[in-house]
Amino acid sequence: MAPPSTAEDSRSRDLDKLLLRAGNLVGPTFEPGPGLRDDLKEYARVLVVGAGGLGCELLKDLALSGFRELEVIDMDRIEVSNLNRQFLFRLEDVGKPKAEVAAKRVMERVSGVNIVPHFCRIEDKELEFYSDFSIIVLGLDSIEARSYINSVACSFLEYNSDDSPQEETIKPMVDGGTEGFQGHARVIMPGVTPCFECTIWLFPPQVKFPLCTLAETPRTAAHCIEYAHLIKWDELHSGKAFDPDDPEHMKWVYDEATKRAELFGIPGVTYSLTQGVVKNIIPAIASTNAIISAACALETLKIASGCSKTLSNYLTYNGAAGLHTKVTEFVRDKDCIECGPGVLVQLDTSITLQKVRVT
Ligand SMILES: [Zn+2]
Image 1 (cartoon, rainbow, N blue to C red):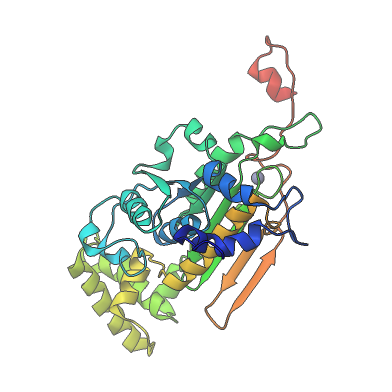
Image 2 (image 1 turned 180 degrees about the vertical axis):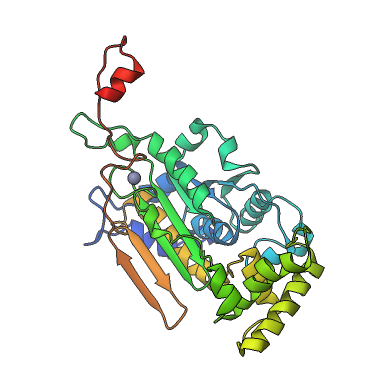
């Protein structure tokens, strides 16, 4: 008779199907066996950057995927508006650091996992801190923060004399991002796949409406709101700055936007849309975060174990109208200042800057 199964056994049952069997899709160095499960526990150290909507999901997913040594970094404190989707937080946690509460909650629920929280800015950590991890997983909502982590990870990369990357200096990253019903998951192997900077053009510039449209030919509810916010406010409040956190100011903009929308017969102006447009808030959807985080956790598992080839290299998900998902293989920018090999220039130490610029 088989021995009674433990909670640990049942938790790894599905994982074992990936780690104990060979297959056509496995990575080139994959050797199935129970030792892999132990390696994952002992040697794979994963840093999760961000403990918000994606970060909460990522920590839970990674803990349940067999990772035991996790760390999380986030500078934010929990707000009431986070509670609908950042499911590790409760009302009594409002005001506490996200990283600390998220780590505590996952450790309470998943036995054997160790999560070290870091309540600070990502820039506050030394480079050595980041170099310690096997994989860095990003659950961020800003381009600047992604650029920063990308440059840190790329700074570890070294090239051989034939411009091939030195394998042991490659710091893998898995990046997730969501915006409403849309999201992406990508695998970044600096020196092998495009880094964040190689494809920075993927991010569209911030949407700004031309003032003449707002003033003369509004067509959408957002146009009416921006008219009240950017033009009407200044006309009627000479010198008084608009404060987006003052509910009276927001209500005033909403009322003015409503009047303008009625004048032009435009539907759709609501108080929450007014807040969204004025504060540039992108609605966060719990299910999108869950789907994107799951994809990221799976890619992390693939990198750590080799149990399957990784995503190559950029997955987009769109659940706004029906459901569409696609993987696109982007190519590296060979001249990328972050991940490119650069050009070796050897100069005599006595040379002056002016002569360098001429040559
Ligand atoms: Zn690059």
